[in-house]
Amino acid sequence: MSSNTIEENQRSCQLKSDDQVWLFGYGSLIYLVDFPYLEAKPASIKGWSRRFWQGSHDHRGTEARPGRVVTLIEDAEAVCGGIAYLVEAPVFEQLDEREKNGYLRFSTAMTFNDDTHATGLIYIASPDNEAWLGEASELEIARQICAAEGASGANSDYLLELAVALRELGLQDQHVFDIEAHIVQMQQP
Image (cartoon, rainbow, N blue to C red; front, side):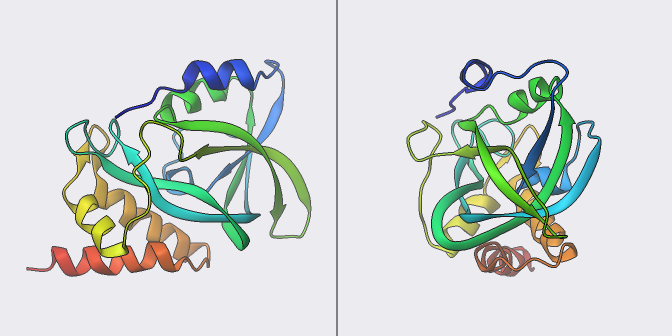
């Protein structure tokens, strides 16, 4: 079931129109950059792991056949790599629309690859949102992803493009790569 979070994000995380804010991307925000930004840098955050546990009823699936997209789960020992974008506050109107299906904005500390630090914002879908699908085996997730398609295209494209982008950044993510291996095998004739 979809879960529209636009108003909640705008109400709980108000920004001034002239603010410049770092945004940490760990999923499609790494490879599908359809928003203006001032600067982009590889970065990481501590204490979080990327997981395909969030449902997509709008972009990569439908209400009847939801896709799966990434969110973050707390994991004290983990470091999640991605890209940080410096954006002007009005860009969050577009981003809130894009991330509306259960994702809320939170403040996070991030470390850039040059060991400098900044605080920025991140979108995370937590288990209490209506679109949450939760934990499943990588094989089950791959099956669901292969069967889903939405307004933004095939769910498998999302997974495959994310895996390529992570490799290009030199990042290792066994969860993503295991799902990718299953999907590649399923798509072979």
